[in-house]
Length: 299
Image 1 (tube, one colour):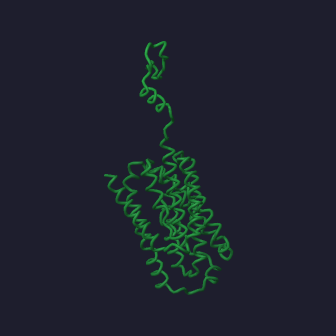
Image 2 (tube, helix red, strand yellow):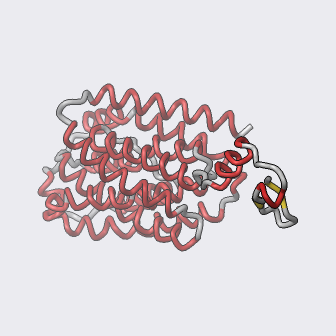
Image 3 (tube, one colour):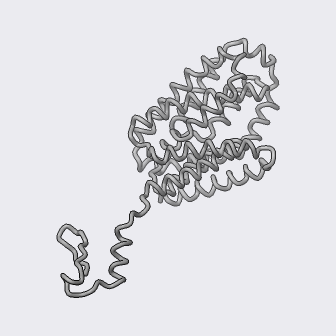
């Protein structure tokens, strides 16, 4: 028979000592109860890796992957603060690979890259510090509007860049512009973008491309090179701050990092086969739904 002892352990006594045979149901219950059950961290890691795989896929085709990973981590049980920090750390390898992929485009704009790094690093650090100083309750109230705002920016990306390029005719070509120093206004705007990026991050690439377009750049590859470099600088200092703060869920972050690498590879292979409009529509739908869900959740 099965008996409980004071410390909660279940003890099986033989039929000879107890005088009765144990029932099959009791034995099955005891065996199943002794088996390990999946931990919440394991489930969260699985959800995070899956979301990061999709994020890496859509980032390689259309961008907006953060709008997938962040809500998925919250739905998996992480707090918004932990989800934001974990997502930033997990997607850092993808930011590094994107930056390295465009490193050749930085060859002619080394002065710009060096000066671009200063407000990016400073802004990323300030934004991360502001996030760590924000209470969970306050961030819960802010985050739905951040997601909806980032989704709106994502939806308006092409329109915004088209307006920037159409309304501002470049006075100099890209080579002549690259030989000059970035303006104080551009560096100040990059500081603001860095602060936002360190605090939340979704949509910073769109903001940087718009600012570079206003400066007169027309070579999208060079613009992407500067954008990826600035984004990496913002994310690396923010990720370092989050890692030292202790709010990063490392098992989830590691699974996400692997998922984003695989998704990025698959996305690059599928870029010529999958319609960007379909991917952008799916990302926008997820962003709007997530923002409304987070807004309802905050009440």
